[in-house]
Length: 434
Image (cartoon, rainbow, N blue to C red):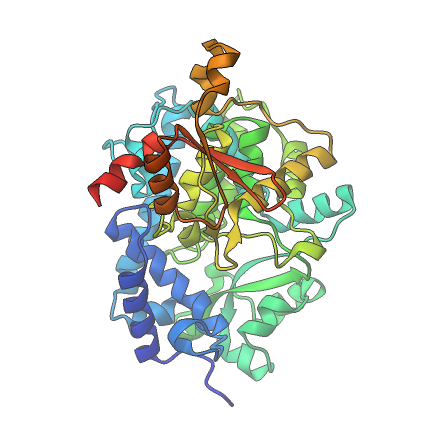
């Protein structure tokens, strides 16, 4: 039987490569915790040093062991990040809310720098945590599929007895990619799926937390869920959805395995009497975030790592770009996720989805144009606009602005469609600094 768990030396090499080649929009301690999880998926897909060989039974436990880390310590650190978000919720429900996404010690949640100073409305953060925490569950996806007549794939993570999995002729790839909805009861009865309460010490070394697919189909785009909720409601709701997605990622490797984003959503629903959304809104968000079958290769679904990944050319992360777009600010059309999809294509997709159910986005005036509203039309027409292609580097665009004394950068595609507007004053300082 071919080896299905990645060799330790390849795991170590991949971790070193990520640490030297990528920067995430957070502090190094949390960056480490995200990279560790990313290696699991990279081993499954044969990325980087795994050299196109798929090690489909590799788990985060295997990665942590290969890196010589303490599973207990790593799990505790990841759970702490979840607990800090839950504590933010508790504080709001106890009528002692914070106006920033920070811990009780005033540290930014998830180590994200702008959360330290960014003013938020806690009510909308809770709304986003509720919507985001539920929209990814199998029952919600199944119901949304029925309501909107589309196909959505779904499943969840279980504690799996890998010794029995091998004896049954199964592996991680089969469990994750084939349909098992009608076999879940059997898997539980035969002991393949283990209840944590029933977990016995003598088989604990074989127990791994693994994803089992219930229904085969395209998934949802976390990017689309964040952006759509921002356009439908506001940016703070979008940030709540983002936090729920982060919990969903972090809970895959903690001391006690639970569906914590779902639990927190239900907790908010039961204890926060001012919540003005319900499950019908969750079904709608699940539909809006669903990737159509004919666009599986075109619509990104960024993991937490890719949402926090800082684009090397522009110095901006994906989540920052999403926030700018939602707020109507200039954004740079970077390529995102492992699919390297142009972010403006994603935004066009989201707008089209909203139109498909006659939903209108909240109108926001781009910040670069706000001051122009009080100017005369003649004065505005005299402004010097520089037009660039989305593939042009930011540096070359800024150099063009400097040379022509331009005041705004208009990004257009090959058909002449305007993809966005950049205020060069936000970036010229970096050009001069270099």
